[in-house]
Image 1: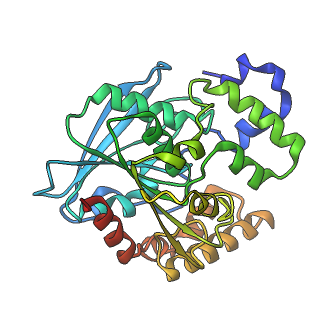
Image 2 (image 1 turned 60 degrees about the vertical axis):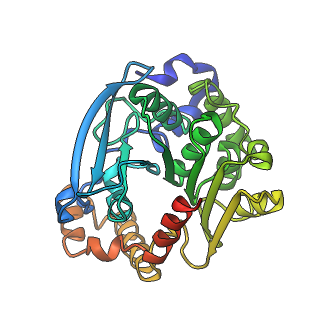
Image 3 (image 1 turned 180 degrees about the vertical axis):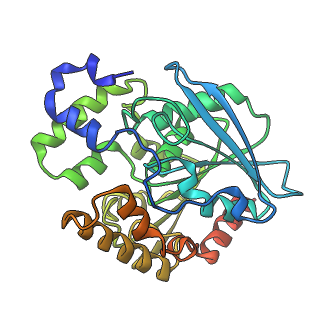
Length: 319
C-alpha cells in the first residue's frame, strides 16, 4: 500500500520523510542480530494476523520454562528492522520469569507492508493485535523510543491495561519532530502528513492523560539523549507531580538508558566509525559491510544494565 498516493497535497517533503524515516525497515546487512537460539533455554513461538489495514503482521512469544502464567509483557520495539533488534531486552524480561509478547510493525522485519508509513502505525498494529488476541490476563507494556511512545498511547487508550515502562520514549510526534528536524516549515509539512497517514490515532493527548492518570508508569531516560530530549520528556513529566508516575534518570546513556555504560560507548564508537567509512566511500558494498561487522561483538554492543531491569521487575511486581 503506497500511503503517500492518497495524500499528494503534502508534497515532496512528505515523500522524502517516508523514504528516509518511515520507510521499509529490514535487517541491515552485516549488523549482528540475536536469535532466540543464542539464549539457552529461551523458547520462541511465532504467529501471524491481519491488521485493520489488511496487512499481515507477525507476532511472537518468548519465554523460559516455568514462566509466570498470570501476566504477559507486551514489548514494543523502537524504529528499525523489527523485534530481533531487541532480543537482548526481551531476554532480560523473559529470564525474570515473564512471558513476553512482541511484534514486527507494518513495514518492519518479518511483517508485510511497503513501509512503516507513520509513527502512529505501531499504535494501530498493537491495538489491533490486542483486539485480535483478547488476552484474559493482566498485560504490562514495555517499550523503547518509538515503542515507548506506542506503549504510552496504548496505555492511554485501553482501560484494561494499567502499567507501562517507557524507555527513552517521546510524549508526542510533534515534540519528537520539532526536536529532530528543528526547521519549522519542514516540521509543519511532516506533521501535516502524519495527521493524515493514520488518522485514527493522531489526536492522542498524552500530556493531558499523564496529568491525572492513576495508571502506574515508569519512565527511564538519560539526560544526554540526542533523539528524545530530556527537556521535552522527563522535565514535562516531573512538572506534572503525578504520584502514579516514577522516573529513573541516568547520565551518559544517550538513547539507550537500559544499556551499560560500556555498551553505550562501544555502540557509539562502532556506528560512528561505520558511518564515517560510508561517507568516505570506503564501505560501498554489502561485502564491505559484512567485513566491517565481522569482528563486532554483539554481546558488547547490546550489554544490558541488570540493575535497570531489576528495577523494572520490582516496578511491575509492586502492589
